[in-house]
Length: 151
Ligand SMILES: [Zn+2]
Image (cartoon, rainbow, N blue to C red; front, side, top):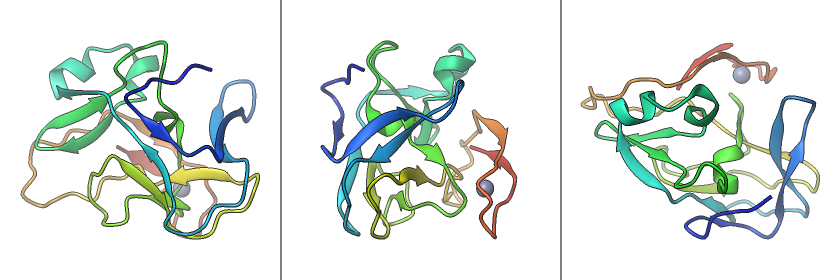
């Protein structure tokens, strides 16, 4: 699996298949709370550009702020950070609850555990330019799972 040079990922992570249709990012070694897992680089694009992508590529795009989204810079070589799956009780994310491109461990993560982050944006109430790209039903089984995710 090739990874683009505009993104960073910890050497303690690997992409693994979960089932026939899904892949996820997994810890190959134990990770301490606060360790940087991924820093995602790519293209900064407005909604109309990411909306025009086919769904199979659009699902890698995520909201940053002020109406702009981050997309992988190549359709063939996608940074590991874009593969992190959603959980309503994530073990990784952005420490400040903003739209940072850096994903850190929110708690100690065991070897073999899947890395997850919360896709639901922590919106600035003044940001009226946000429009969700994804709608899916979550099966994370967290006590506070909201089931229907828009992100
Ligand atoms: Zn959930």
